[in-house]
Length: 541
Image 1 (cartoon, rainbow, N blue to C red):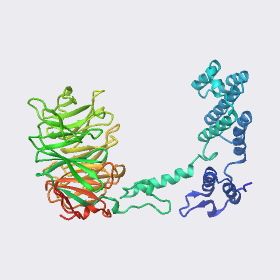
Image 2 (cartoon, rainbow, N blue to C red):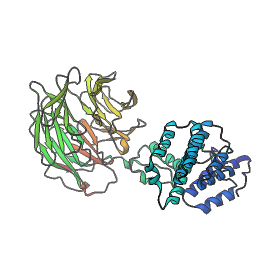
Image 3 (cartoon, helix red, strand yellow):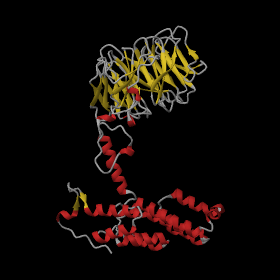
Image 4 (cartoon, helix red, strand yellow):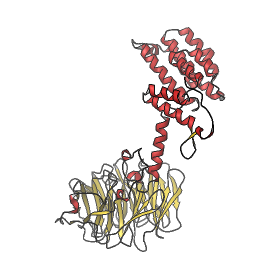
């Protein structure tokens, strides 16, 4: 039997900070040992430390539950020392409920009825459950369903399950919650990961042997490729949802679909047909199709596999300024230069149009994953969040002109680029709330775009007019890296959603740079330029 703990001085705490109570620490370790199946070791720890996992009264209570001594367990429950009457009633209810079910299993119907009427109902703990238990008397299917040759085994298993449920109701000082030590360790690892400025690798790589800390080598800062197939400034680019493709659009009136392979990024299709520069592209939810939007021109829908143009969307006398997909891929949305937003079927039939000041001439357009909200820049310093089902409008009001925005993958956050060289992060889930600000990049004349990226979208990336790519830690707002290499303004960036170590940037220097890890050892760095306009680089200009 475990000896009582001898109190006195520093022996009552563990650890160098003096914040860990020794009794709690030992009890939690013992609980973990028992849960892992190390019964002898757990008992030895109790014996040697003199610290019991449970009091003698609790041990009796647990044994009574496992043996099905329901009436005795109710008496013992009142001797544990609980002060919360609500807890006592809730625990009593679960015990008596199990007693009731056991009596029904044994076909002691009158005893079960007596338990329900005189013991369970007076507790007043869960009236809906009481009505459900009452229905068992008129539902013979219940009794027949629970009877089997393995009835005793099932009953023992149900008692173990009951003990787990009771453990959740009782104070942790009485019965330590299951998996408490594992929870504390996981919590410590998560806190270390979240505090790590450069964490951009999978959680399975974390270790208990040392405090977690990643180096800069986890951030894509090496230019692995320079893509040179565009003939003019590259304005926009976006990775597909599955990360297997990259689409870019340019002032040269073309878009390009690039394929992401193990050996590098290669040109798949060059999409021609627009009569004006292309301002943006949008991937279908399944990544099988792509929308390209001309600057106040038309929207074209392309087949990614063949590169064929499947449809052209246009409206007489008006030009398109933005495009996006519904989450199910059955409709597309477009912003028009008359400040309206329209919804189209794939075959070109216009379904709905929201008129008024819904969008600007140069605008981004996003649709949330549930398809309910359309997000667009509606005024110079305002973003509209339109709930198209509830017909409710919400607005993000900024104090500076808005140049672009980007929606997070979980649809909870919006990254807003402002004309005053500031990027702001808004929580749009419930009440609109400004979360963070990012500064350092340069913007005076052009539309500069930013994006979320990295593992769990823990980073923010942005282009800049000083030819650099800027990277911030999303949580702290600290600038962690600037990437040189472009020789013109960097207009747009996109982080591969399937590969946290791959980032792409588009520039006025007519190139796209693919960034990866500094320590990445691939043949990409040694290859000669290809005839398709792809140049491999070690990161120099």
